[in-house]
Length: 132
View 1 (cartoon, rainbow, N blue to C red):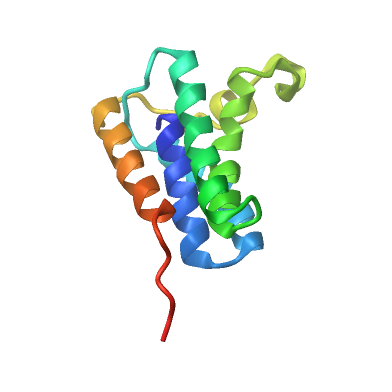
View 2 (cartoon, one colour):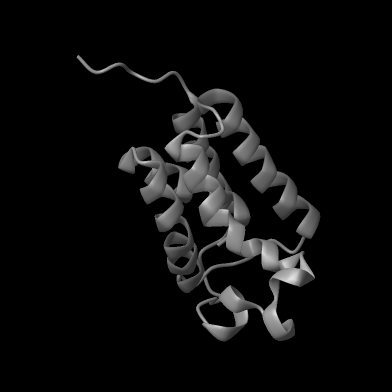
């Protein structure tokens, strides 16, 4: 999955759980599940980083840094940091993307992933409805 969709699905799970702890624990699991789905990636590392950061910053600005949605977004996208930070690769190998073998290329278009991510993030960053 592209980073933006990892951010969005993690945010959705965090918001649905309503729990900071659950959001952080679910994040890496959602990341692995998302990478298991056969998908296309975006070739531009700069775009991937920028779109992921933009999603996290939007959630932080609208919901706060400790909101379960924001924490879920960060936790779900964090495994992709091993692509850009060499110190996160024990023994030089990627933990989430090499050793576990969950990453699968396939037919889920990157453009559709980006559209879904945008829709989820817009929904989560809008005004919250109050219960009652």
